Every structure is written in C-alpha cells, then in structure tokens.
Image (tube, rainbow, N blue to C red; front, side, top):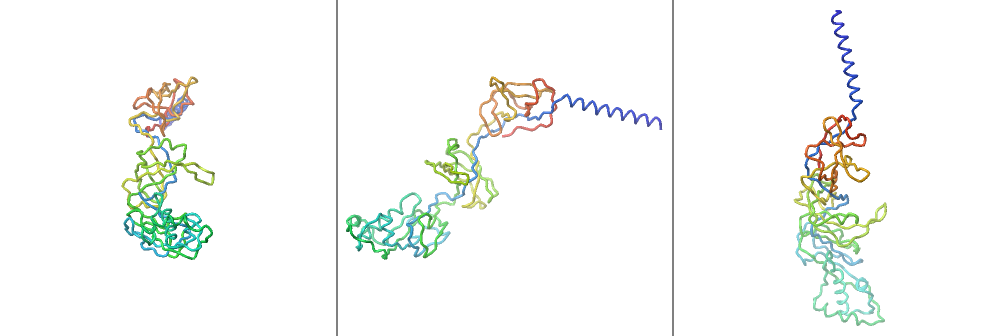
Length: 364
C-alpha cells in the first residue's frame, strides 16, 4: 500500500508541475487569430434592397381623368394583338376640352368635335408606355377637322353633356396581365386602366443611390434573392436610366437612378410584383491573394505591413496592396499561397512569441 501511495503522490506532483509549466508557457505567448492565405476570386458589389419584379417589355395604358369605362372587351390572361380593342370609354366634351386646352364653342359641329377627339387621342397615345385610343370615326374625317378646332367662335361655351365613345387599343401584342378598373368606373389619369406584357421573361427594377450609380455598367452580373421565392437567380444589368429622380422616404428625400436587371431562366416560384434584393457585381478579379482589412496596418510613413506566423513567432512583413474588395485588400507583393496571416496584429510586435487560437481559410 505504501508503494502505491508513493506512486500516486509522485504522479500528482508531476501533473501539477506540468499544469504550472503550461500556464507559464501560455503566459509568455500572445494568443493570435490566423487566416491561411490562398488565391481566390474577389468581388466588389453594390446592394439594393428595394427591387420590384416585373415582366420584360410591359406597357401600362393611361387615359384622360374623368373618362368612364363603358365596356371591357378582354380579361386577364388574354392574348391580344397590337391595335386590338381593349375597352370602350365614354368621354364628355368638357373632358376633351381639358385635355386639349380650353376651346370656346356654344355648339360643336361634327368637324370641330372630331378635331377635339383627335387631339385627345393624340395626347393619350403619346409616350413609350401609353395606350393608343382612337375615336369610332374615320381617320380622314378626324384629320380634316384640325383646322376647324382653331377657328371656333371666341364667345362660345362647351356643351358638357355631350359625350363620345373612344376605343382604347393595345399598343403592343402580348398578354393582358392587369385590369385594375371595372365597367362604369371613372378613370384616374395617374393610374393605368390596363397592362399588357409582350414577354414572359422577368426583370427587376432597382433604385440605386446617385453616389453609387457611376460604378454600375450595362452587362454586369447580379445575384437576385427575395422573401417570396427560394431560388437564388442570376441576372444581368440591361438598362440604366438616363435621368435621376427624387424618392421621398420617412427619413428624407433621396436622389436615385433606376436600373433594370434581367433575370436569367426564371422559374415558377418568382412572380411579377414580388419584392427582390439584388447584389450587382461591379468588379471581379480571379486568382488574387486577399488580406483581410483587420490584418493590414501602416507605419507612420504610410508603408503597409502585415504579421505572419513563422514557427511560434510573429514576423513583420511589408506588403503592397492595390484594389479593395468586400473581404479585404488585394496584395500584390509580400504574401504567397498558404502563408499564415495574423488577423489581430495590434497586440503584438515583430518577433513576439505567439500562440495561435484558431486558423481559417481566406475566402472571396
């Protein structure tokens, strides 16, 4: 029993000495975090969280405020041809005068009325996203009446009770995707009466802040995600608006430029009207060595450096950086593949004894 007691005592003492030596060892070494450097594909990007999914080449049809929808000739999902009648409106003489400017006349003869009607038609059919609306009268009669409009008597009044029917026709061939009005409803000029999509392809309309728009170019790749769909889609920038506009938010006014990203190979899980987020890749470099921002420091003279783990010591190494990416600086000189880079260098000096706490790989 004495022999076993002696052995136990010796083992206990040795264990305590080992633990104490380990603590002394650790106390002399500074713990550091390490990242293993390797060539990656590095990206710079711009994020937008305010995108709306819509169909490519979609036209919204607008008409004069106050017109009444007499008859809707199509329904959602119908395929229509360009020029096909979509709905019939009832338009009063007063509305025609408002749309073309106040034209005094106590009695509108047929030629004068056709001139007003044609002017109204010309107004609401203008613009890239407007409808073509045409009166139910021969075109030659309408054209020949334009002179009669300007020669109406100066002391006359318009008979507001007189109305004419106007046909709204499809500006493009496609599929009817929205009819937000109903028969006998009064039209608001600020809202479309019908929307037609010429394609089943989808795109995302984004609002990009003016401070970032200079970095975006047509053809850049984009990653598209959203709460309403689970697929991560790729897309390309297809259009950048030539004009900026003001958007009012709860925090103030923001100047933005609209950017269109076309979605590649959309599936059934993504639908027009969904909100979407987009990450536009503005720059991409392959096979580069990147040092995390927290690992790079600069001397008083502006020369950059990093600390590498060599054995159990931290070694100060000068580096030359170039581009800035999301994860760090591109390093042109000073690093090589598989170098162990210290990411918390502020607590160490050149030649200091260090104890690595963790090691991870660099990534793009």
